[in-house]
Image (cartoon, rainbow, N blue to C red):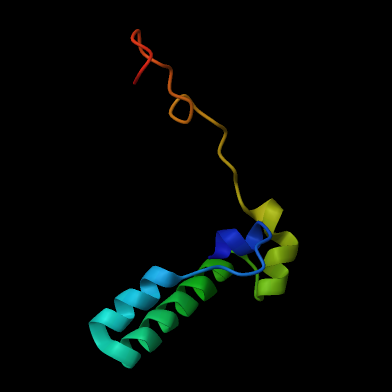
Length: 83
């Protein structure tokens, strides 16, 4: 969630955690799942040194490292044209 917001997302979908919470504990499970997501977002923002989502969006591109493409991203086709 923090990465998406830092890279400019206006919103982030969180369908699976919501559904896991619903299946595990009904309404209380959904509330707990959303609270866990909130705590994790607050922790991530704290580790990044920002206090608000607006600050995260403003500083985001400088906070998030992008890895350089590797051979793993562009696999070389084998002798038969596959894998």
